[in-house]
Image: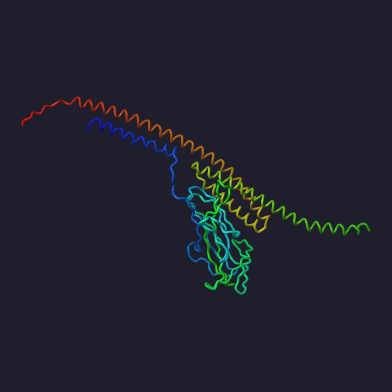
Amino acid sequence: MNLEDYRTLFAVVGLVLTLIAAVPMLSMVVAFPGGGERFSEFWVLGPNHMAEDYPFNAIVNEIYRVFVGVGNHMGRSTYYMVYVKLRNQTQPLPDASSSEPSPLPPIYEFRAFVEDSATWEAPLNFSFLEVSHFENSCLVRRMSINDVIFSVDSSSRWDSENNGFYYQLFFELWLYDVKLRSFQFHARFVGIWLNVTGS
Amino acid sequence: MTACRSFPIFALLFALALSIFPLEVCAADAGEAALAIERAEEIVVSCYQVVLEAESAGGDVSSLLARLNEAGGLLAQAHILYRLEDFDGAARFADVCSQIGEEVRVEAYGFRSLAVEKAVQRFRWTMIGSILSVIIIIVASFLGWHIFKSRYCRRILRMNPEVISDES
């Protein structure tokens, strides 16, 4: 190695060390893009905290339990709202592709502040309190959610294919948009089907 | 006689008052409940914004979020009761939510100031440390190079030329 080679070696080593020393400073001044995909998890679990044994055949005055949960991966603490809604087979579901919530009114709601990379979960106890059956239709007049009684007045037609009066208890996830200063539908929903044939 | 004659008028007025008064009370309650919910909502949202600022400054906001969750739960109850037209209950829940929200807000402002102060200090020390390191490395590289170069040249100059006879 001659002197020129040594000079190049010194310059390269010096430059590399300078860059390493400047990394903390650069990380504070330069905003690096990325940080991974931002999303929220949303789930409903059965009474044993598992994705099984969901209530299905609903009997009047019987109390059923499910768990609703949210996982926050939005990169910061997030303010969530969960709407609980009841629909029959013909009423509209939310449209996740166009981020349109279901036009049905909410029966119950949860609000939660979830830290980034943390989860939130809440139990939901529900029961059908007043159900009337006619020839081929069923009318749910009142139901109870977490010990609060609601007038529902939702009717369902007999499903001859599946032999039952079917309702779906579904949950919509909304999150608070700081810029818009309002809750926006987060295009996520989960639900459970209930056969309200027995009384 | 006068008392007997005025009795039907009083009775009529009383009946009218009874029919109107409860309606007015209900209307006022609905309005009050809506106002209480709106106020609670504003407080909770402003708390959330302060918490976000504290979080982006690097503060640990877990304890604040736990309290905010409490307020959020009460606000949800207030909304549910309002939809059920239990305006007294809705206003009560909203008022408790506002109280908790106010406490959290005061705490959050203090938290944010502390987090921002810490972040500024952290930034300052990182910048100073980083700049000093860069300067030290540059100076050390130059010095090192000059020392190495002089030693290298001295070593070259100390070398004795040697003539190797060509025997072939």
